[in-house]
Length: 255
Image 1: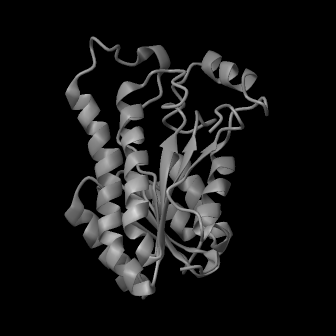
Image 2: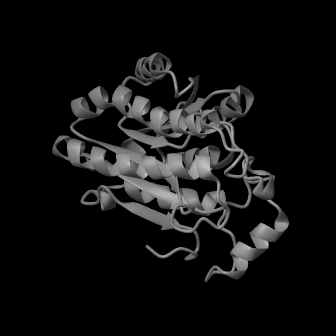
């Protein structure tokens, strides 16, 4: 599938706020039809959908629940008349980038690790599984997973979040191999700390300053800047790119 973005139906998970909302706005700006998934942020998601009448729909689903995800994809198809063919797996389980307030290794329990695995890895798997029939029917599709540069540069060692995102990179590459014959590309876009989302609002100012000072662009990447890079993997220009991880952090981390 090499359709222009303005001919695509795009699902963005966790689109009610933060980075997800910025990604949804970027797709809407380029003319796509967007399914705005949310868990708790109904008011914000519906307000964003109202900004693009006829081209956006807000649907609630917990991505850790495969039945809820399947029902969401079915509802989107009924409402829009065509299947979703591009998915952005952005939804993040409850998490705050709170610096020194994070659990230290001796206090970190498996329940916290498992929460991130279920949300980040399980959520992405459920969305891909539910979207696959529609992508195959359409002759191809795009899967874009949202990662992090923290497993290359753990400037703050968020063990649970980073491990789940590292597992998602592995799934990105194995899915790319399995789904390539179907014309489905699977890629990851990885950011660093973003200035600012709900999750990063708890980050101490000193951490923002440290990252900016060590980044070639001397600034912390914004959600809008990051969202623009996501568009590449949905566009026809990326039709020969799959299984890749693009780091979008102003040059802080290389490769």
